[in-house]
Length: 323
Image (cartoon, rainbow, N blue to C red; front, side, top):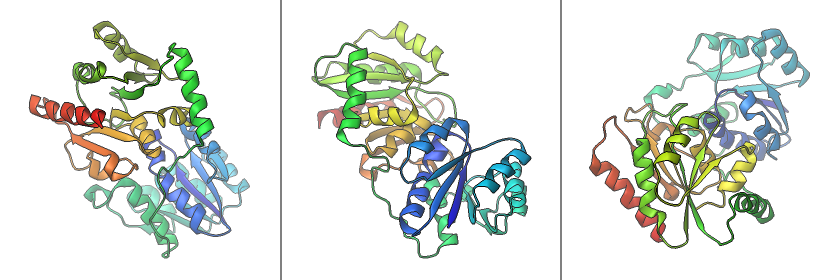
C-alpha cells in the first residue's frame, strides 16, 4: 500500500508530523510511506529511514498532479492542505484522501476529519496522529524517543568538525541559545535577556555557551557580537538539517523560542528551554516539542514580561547546568 503523507510548510510543522509518519511506517505492515514536503524540508525527508520516497511540493496544479500520479498513491493523509494540493490529489485520482475539515480545500477530500485544532485539546503532533487513526483505528499513538536517533560515530563526526572550526581542544557541555525572532515565534525573550541568560552560566566549569543563527538572523548575530563581554561561540549553521540534528544531539540544553530549531532539538530528545506566546493557540499546549516531557521546560512569555519571569528562567537554567 502506497501512503502519501503531506506537510508542505515550515521546519517545525514538518517535525511535528514525523511521529505520525514513523508510526505509519512501523504499524501499517507492508506500507510504502511517501511524503510531500516544501523545499526546506526536502533533504531532511530524503535522509530519514522511515520515509521511502519524497515528493517536492509545486505551486502548479498540473505539475503536482503529475508528480503524485507517478507514485501510484492509494491513500493520502494531509496534515496541512491548501487548494492546490487538494485539487492535485483529486485530479491524480487518489482513492482515499484524508484531511482536516478546516478549509475550502476540504471539499476535494473524501474523508474529512473534524478536529477543531483551534480549541487546543491536544498538541499538534497528536492531532496529526489522530488523522492517521481515522484511517486505521487500531493505530497506537506511541513512538520511541528520540524520534531522530544517530549512532555514536555520526554524532562524533559532527562534533569533531564543530570543535575544529572553533579550535576547541577540551571537552565541554554545550548550552545552545537560538534567539530567533521569525517564523511562528509569538513569545520570546529580548535579545538582551538572551545575552544575560548566556552570561549567567558562561563562567561555570566545563560549560561552553553557543549562540546559533539561521540565514535570516544576521542582525541578531551582529548585535550579540557587539554586546557580549564573555566567552561564547557565535555559530552560523550552514549544515543540512539532518547534520544540524546530529550536532545538537551532542548538546546538553537548547534554548529557543517556538520555531524550527526548537523542534529539531525536541526531535533528538535533548533538554529544552522553550518560549511560547501567551495565547492558547501559540502555547506549548499546542506547539510543544516532541522530546520527553521531563526534558521540556516551557514558558509563556507576554509582551513586556517582568523580571520575576526572567529570573525564574535563569534559575531553571542554573539548576539544569548544575546537574
